[in-house]
Length: 405
Image 1 (cartoon, helix red, strand yellow):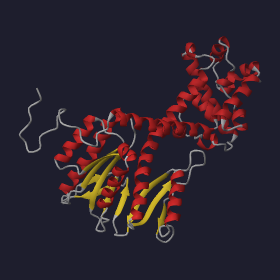
Image 2 (tube, rainbow, N blue to C red):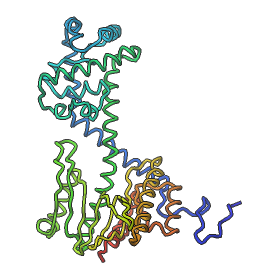
Image 3 (cartoon, rainbow, N blue to C red):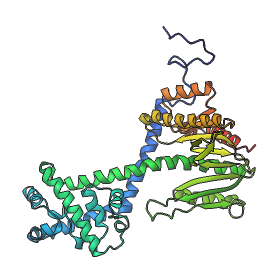
Image 4 (cartoon, rainbow, N blue to C red):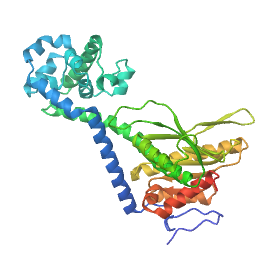
């Protein structure tokens, strides 16, 4: 027997109600997950290639084959190595350079720092935090002898403690597993940021082209993270305006392809009507009592008089388990916007939720928000990617929110 419905004007949605059109089907989720997996695999592979780990491992192998174990034993204390740790390696046996290094090795080849830092299970961010920044040296920049000695001693003492306390965990290949486990965690953190950037690049890149085709685009501001296989770009905002590329469609389209290949981060899209689309911009409103209200929608459309007319929450990533968390994060942002609008006497902006996938429960809740008038629209990026009709409707909606008609 179906659940009894409320007599309220906006009754809640039940599992017996038809799913909203923007809900993701199981097959759509599988395809989205597959696309995400390909992107993630490419990201990991390119990061490993950029770090040059094939060459680093070959170099470590060469050092290990030609090492004088007795000399290492004699220098253990000076190198920060616990003799008991060498005893553990001898019993297996494992050549010492797979786990320990000398300052001379780091001086001769600074890129080896990446290997020994990961064996020690320490992140580059942590090394920077303790005053032993290794990032530039891992990229090949020479380091002073004093710093090489500090790093070798720090890595060796850390790994010594790990081995002495867990001798049974050490095997012939454990050093490689440790390196890639720690490295994978680091790249995984970068990937989580990249997922969001890819979603923004896809949506805003399509919107910029659409606005330009309609004659609405005045300028775009962005910066570049740089290709994964090259050096990082300087964190510097760049602008394309009518004075350079916007007047020529072919030049603009070619330039957009170039900046997207360099991992673009869009900051602002300006329209000829004077309205702006801002990305990831925090806004502060003050109410009549002087109380501050801070909001920060992922996407925000402003009129020339600085009125917020539309706010969008954009969530990338195709993991079904993350769909619910994305929705919770978005609704908290929406609630802050609605509350701040009310308390500061501003008109409530239209609000949209944009996500790669929407599992059934999230889709039903989003539909309820629309029914209650708190949300204007919901968009499923996986569906938009597979349907030209939905993509065109989505872009036309965004153009409307920006006041380009």
